[in-house]
Image (cartoon, helix red, strand yellow):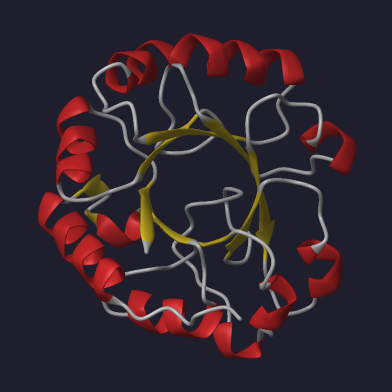
Length: 207
């Protein structure tokens, strides 16, 4: 199971997360308490191993701004959490992760057919478009809709529930932010425990 640690804002946490097994590091460039500057993200990204995915999170920002940040930081993927259209998502040359806030009222078939490289299933919207620490009701989601897609499960994941989330949704990757924080700050021990639990969880084999 691949793991993304999002909302990284300092070098030590980023490097520790990768050392502990994180496959992807997320930098938030949208309005958030975890927002990072381009300069700091660039400083961190250059220190990460080549194989580590460097993912930038954006919300309703212009194509020009996203492409400028992606190029300067050296992002490998962009994650869009706003109201971006299908056409907009298809206009980038690097892989796109499109996030959807799930509240059990969406047309899952429509989400599953959205043209992008990865689908991120997140909890309900809060003050921010992501990173609110809220999960959706996994049991009410028919994961068969997503069997042919690379799904990233996010929203309210912790060491206590990530194995259950993996079992219910069968994702390609799990994405954690607030679930590995203590008093709003990334906690290395929590990151370690979360990665160990996620990597050890059983994923259904797709037929």
